[in-house]
Image (cartoon, rainbow, N blue to C red; front, side, top):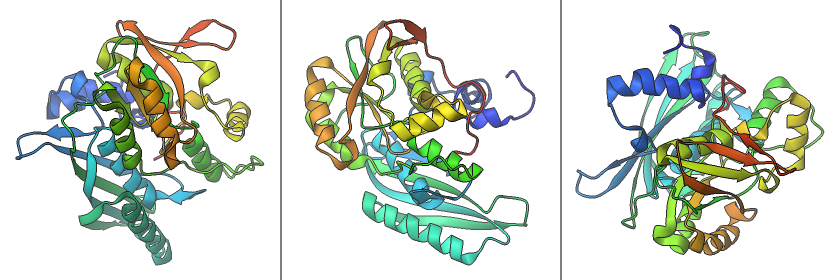
Length: 337
């Protein structure tokens, strides 16, 4: 550990988050290898293969264009299960409420959770509620845990990328992070930037149906954005990955907002996007399946696994040069999910 206190950057999903996990949390709690650090744990000693995940949500503000902390919490946990290739079944909900939270706001959040669960086809089956004194939390924090099962025998994880594989994404990047930031800071950007928060399990089912065993890795690029998530895959797979700058899908509104604020959309959070790393012979079929799904109509190829290596990620720029891509350093947008 390079700091003797917790910093905001430790929650960024980037370099400091990984240092906290690798140097302190994982050695004490589990000792798992980096290659096993995926969006969900796979349990194979309970009669059948089960995916299990948990996540906590502290987004500020709790309401933002296109959604709120409630549907964000459901979709995030559903998607973590889906990235393992699992079919989500059920989730739990833990609420930490601040004294003084308006009941009308809590009702709106809970309604959004119910509707998101129905859309994702999961049941909310258990939960817990705690209330803390005014000033000891910030309106509402939510923890959701989830379980899913497998309809196939494939093993999909961050360590699966192989030389020659293609990297696909299902749409534009940076939408969620910029929507939250604009609402938080009261920015008038002159455009309608909305969160991309959405359940991706049915899209994953289509990807697996089209690619089968050629689907080697799936990840949703949330905190730390596409850059950090691609770096994680490269490190886990001990591979070198090249991204194509001209192929990265960024909406004009998000590109403009990032330019004004000095942000790189590669590092801005997403909540309805996934990265699929697939064998080259299956890339066209998987891309077609993604584009046929409502959550993947803007899917495109953004990179490739170049060779075995030490986890390096490079960007082929629009002018033909190459630059190194690293994990997010520090905290670009605190409390984005």
